[in-house]
Image (cartoon, rainbow, N blue to C red; front, top):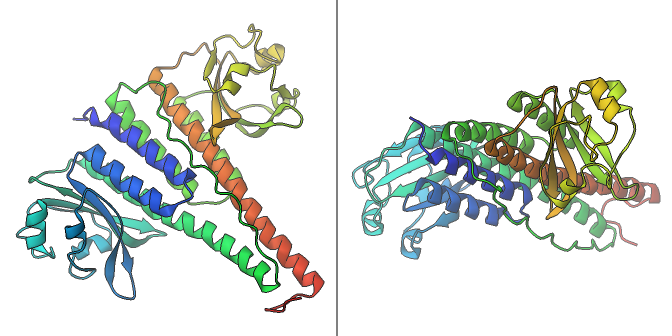
Length: 393
């Protein structure tokens, strides 16, 4: 039976996904992931270790509530410390004091560790590490709990790959410029996205589990590609499927023209899309202040532009949600229905989470694309000017 803990899993997964997509520090991401997993599962402690293929050790990269004495006990070897996990299996050891797959049994007794759950951290179909949870008492883990832990472990692997890609692009550009005597200016570190919980708490545990799974699938897909348009299209398509609406669109604010520019849509006709621009000051302005707004009758509401075109398109109700990044509204996620449609608190909570993640994704994609463009631009420019190798002027 699905427990109310599903609600906590949905909230926790959203927070971890948001942190992975917004934080510039991989260490902060992994520490936050371990901490939130420990808290959500109500276990004693947790750790995340990565495989060092040279030494064949599991190197600690993040932990929560483990003592310094325990962490200093000695190295964990990949072939001695629950090796099945490195083949992609989730393993639960109920009695860590007596299991031959466990190293440092005496140290575990002193630390008060009894049951251990180990989940593989996977990146690009390869196990690169282990997420471990430690319980003081003998404990069983439900299928739902294992699914949740496995999803978070996978998020950790994707975060590592994602961070490596961004790091490599920055290093390549910096090295290229330094090779020709140009100092690479360091950009000021962006403030990390402030974690913001939903305005209202979901109430239905069954729905929360469904939304957790959908958010997991969407976030996993987002982290698996650097193609921003593909990411945005994915979100609009999934919203239609999940919420069973006629259409969905994403528009971003153009500060110069003061218009809302369409960057993705599904379910809207070409004729409707050609109707004309949406203006920031005339198109449901409260959304741009950070508030979700539901318009029940789009053909007869003064906040709506182009009511006649909406009637012709068969649009009745519109739900608009702010897309935020760095605590600033950068666009709008809209859902369109052919009938009068109300949304539950839980549906608005899920869509708000998705809109916020979309904002972070858009900003991250722009940052990556800008860095990648700069790399290509400088390569072409330096080649044109005759700079090659390590030559400096």
